[in-house]
Amino acid sequence: MKATTEFLSWLEYDIEGFVSRVTSQDVKRVLRKDSLTPEDFLCLLSPAAEGFLEEMAILSQKITAHHFGRAILLFAPLYIADYCQNQCVYCGFRAQNRFPRTKLSLEEIRKNGEVLSEKGFRHILLLTGDAPSITPVDFLEEVLSLLSPMFDSLAVEVYPLSEEEYLRLRRVGLDGLTIYQETYDREVYDEVHPAGPKKDYLWRLGTPERGALAGLRWITIGALYGLANPLHDAFWTGMHLLTLKKYYPSVEWGLSLPRMNPAEGDFVPTYHLSDKKFVQFLFAFRIFFPTAGITLSTRERPQMRDILLPLGVTKVSAESHTEVGGYAAQNHHIPQFEVADNRSVEEMIAVIRSKGFEPVFKDWVGVL
Image 1 (cartoon, helix red, strand yellow):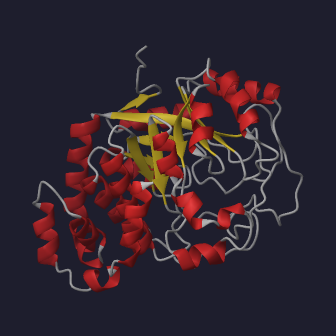
Image 2: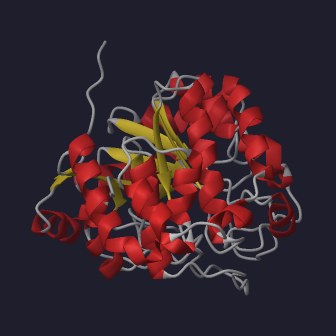
């Protein structure tokens, strides 16, 4: 696990000491460079760069157009179970929340898949809580085998698996993985994950590397902004991605910047990532990682998503349900978090086209 081991040294970096010395002249210098260092990335994340959002937006748009053209990929999440044994204080699925838990049958999964396929989706993300005894790898194999003929890309956002387990799933159609460290701050991580298997910081940290070793085509990482200092988590996310790209260059690496939204319970985020800082961070990621995919989820308000679509984003979800089996039937299951953008697929297509971009449902062709 070379990438994971190398990344850990970045947790000792003096982030605050560096940003306290950054000046506007430093930001101007970085924006003129063709190749950036980790310190340049941190410079773009720093308070000194807040006055350069227009310049960063122009550069971010230019870089994105060069590497991705004018295409925006649409995908949908499909929650297939909400059983969980973790006590994550910020999550609607946490074990201490008392509500009827649900696991879809294969028939129910097929019906949800058919609805999504009829809406045009070719990429879907399958999600569960952390309960391997309820949704074991054997079950995930059955689900992937069932859905593989319907979709061109199947990804999972489930509990961390071993390299061998990802290999098993890859053989039945899995080609993508999304895994968030939530926060890279080890002290905060321990506080917000008081019990359950997710409390193992290092096992979760090594998940994207195990996915890469298993040969998955694309992997998305990120932090959940609101749990710890956003500047620190943004920098550490970048350094994690940098080390992963170094050792696994053939993987299509991507990132997402989810912000805390209300979930079932009374958790109040310790930190607030403002719209202005969110936009600055997104531009900084695009400038530092020209070829990385950047996902913008329905956690964000419609106005924010519309503004950012032409400025660095490559992938968006649409008409998302964060409760189990929310597509095939009306239900009253508890969502993992509240969705801020409830627009339909058709509405999102219209918005994307109005920005001069082309909505895409399939972005790759396999070669036998």
